[in-house]
Structure formats: structure tokens, C-alpha cells
Length: 433
Ligand code: 9MR
Image (cartoon, rainbow, N blue to C red; front, side):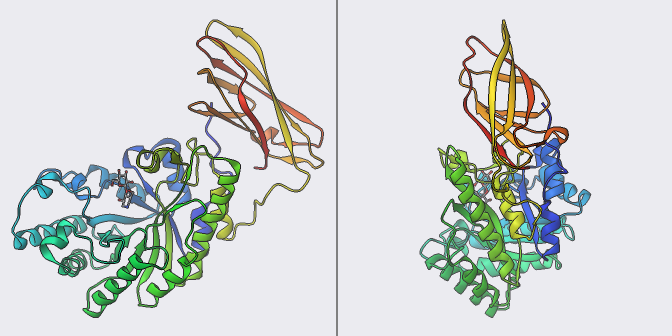
């Protein structure tokens, strides 16, 4: 089983560069090798450590630091000419227990916070382009969240945090970042007023991050207007944690809606001069926080679990001006058949045929199906075949992607089985590269 050719298809990073914005992704440091690493490096212009720069990760025990994960991401970015969005210095969550469980007088807590910022932002001085200095300071009603910081230090914790970050790394762009603030509404009004107050006090805040953890079909219609009003305050804006989740299983209709949603968000950023970029919160469904947090939901990112670009990826590319793809031409269709040729003890061989059932030549094809009895593909020929749990995806190779109208191509595979070997379900052929 091979890995999909990475050179094929649009490169978000280059398309975004050409439009003057950055397309980034959150990454998991330990995964930055193989296909995951190649795609993260090739497709994205910036990386954000999903967890590795959080307080609990870098200082699990008071005074004893662990930088390996964060270093790995920063080094990866340097090796791939990428920016880094540092995430995050001051947050109510993922704090070490010595901090949440301790009882510190306010003066000491304030110093702990500013020292932490000095140490972390100081360590990465000149290597982190943006810092999410303060993450998620708002309540849903637009008031300030009763976090550890707010409870003990009051609103002034924000000003102190930004000033400490500026002192530690004068060149980094300093952001406040939140969720459910993407469209107009009470929470984003609260954030807007907060940013306005901070700016009026001369607090060094350069940007506002909008996380955009969204649901398919529910991109706020006021996203662009909201970005614009913040930008009009004189700060940069960015989409910082974009993902668009759906109830599983993903269907063609949901994936098509998701494509249009990713397009909308990207277009909204492009429409606002001070929107510096979009970061997706994980680029593959195999590296997304959604399924564990929202049981039954997922498929929220632009690549599927096998690193196959989804319609969402094409949607982003098209929003960025890519014209190389497009929907398959009218009259383009295909079918696929599956025949077990041979079976032995724990194994079998299957032969598949993809047929151009349309009226025009077919340029690229994908066959998908599900195994119901635990069958597992072990080897394949004349197609790139990948399997995630029960779902199998077979994509043409360079030499057999084009099929004339009425023509067909064959590919095959060996599989393992434990017991019966019923034919697959959901056997489907789709056209297009
Ligand atoms: O992606 C992160 C996930 O791996 C962690 O388990 C989770 C813990 O809270 O944090 C996730 O990232 C969050 C980000 O830091 C802040 N905004 C919400 C993100 C999703 O929870």
C-alpha cells in the first residue's frame, strides 16, 4: 500500500502566499515525520503546536521545563521556511496542577504569570511570529471569564501579560484569541470592547485571533463584518483554529457543504485587508480533537484520515484562486466492480474493474468501499490503496488515471481475513483527480 503522491494537486501554502496571506495548520510534534510531516511542510506556511507550548506541557513541575515538543515544532518550521504561531501563554486550561492546586497571593501569581511569559516567549524570541498571549478570556455573555487569572488579578492581568510578552520578544505579533467570537454577537461584542479598552490603555496588542471551531452549514453570515470591525480598531485579525465538524458518517452531501464552508471562511479572510491568514486546527482527520470531544462527530479537517485531500481542500484552494481543478466535466461518470478471485486460509485476492460509464474521457478515479468482516488490505497493484478501519480508498496511479469513454482499467489486491469473506458494501466510484 503506497502513500498518495504529494506533488499532485494544489499547494495551499503557495496559493495563500500569492494572495498575501498565510495558510497554517496546528500540528502534533510527535507526528511530524512520514506523510504527515511531508504534508505539513509542503502545504502550509505556518505551524502552531496544538499542545506543546501550553503551560502544563512546558512546566509540568514548578521550575522544571520541558521544551522538547515545542522545540521540535519550532525547528520543523525553521527547516521548512514556515512561520510559527505560538499557542498559548496565558489560558485558564491545560495549566499544571502545581499552579491550579497552589494558593498564591495575587502578587506572587502575577509574577508567576509574567515570569512564565518572559521565560517562554524569551526562549523563542525571534522564532515565533505570533503569540496567542491570552487565550479564551471571554464568557459567552461577553463578560470576562472567571479564570484563575481574572479571579485573582482582575482585568489588569491582560495588560500585564501583553506587556510582558512585548518585553520578552519585541518583534512577535501579540494576539488575544477566542472561540464563538467569529460572528457578531454578545461574546464578540465583549471581546471587541475589551480590545478597544486595552488599546486605549496603550497595551501592546497587535491582533485578534478567531478560532472558528465551526459546524457544517453554520458558518456565521457575519464573519466578514465581524473581522472587519476588529480590523478597523487598528489590529490584525486571523482565523486561528479552523475546523468544521459534522455528524459521522461523512456523506458526499456533507463533504460538499463542508467544502463550501471552508471556501466561505477563506474568502472572508481574503476580503478583510488586515486578515493575515487562516490556520486549520489539524490538517487531517487523523489528528483532530473533535471525535474525542464531540462523540459521533468528526471529519472536520481538509484531509481525511489517510491523508487524501477532501473537497474542503479543493474549496480552500479555489477560494485562494486555484483554477486547476474544478468539478469533473459534465458527462463524466464511472462504475466499479469487485470480484473475489481466490481465497485461502487467512487470505484472499480480489480483482476490481473501474469502467468509464460517461461520454467523455475520465481524468482520474477513486474507488471506495467498506469491509464488513474485518478484512484488511495487505497489498495492492495498479492503484494506491489505503484503509482506515473498515473503509478502503483506491486511487488511480499516474499511468492509469485516464480512461476513454467506454474503457476500463483493472487493479487488484490481496487481503487478510479471519473467517468469512463477504463482498464489500458501499462500493463507489468517483471521477476526477
Ligand atoms: O487540540 C487540542 C487538544 O489536543 C487538547 O486535548 C485540548 C485540551 O483543551 O486543546 C485543544 O486545543 C484547543 C486550543 O488550545 C484552544 N482552543 C480550543 C482547542 C480545542 O479544544
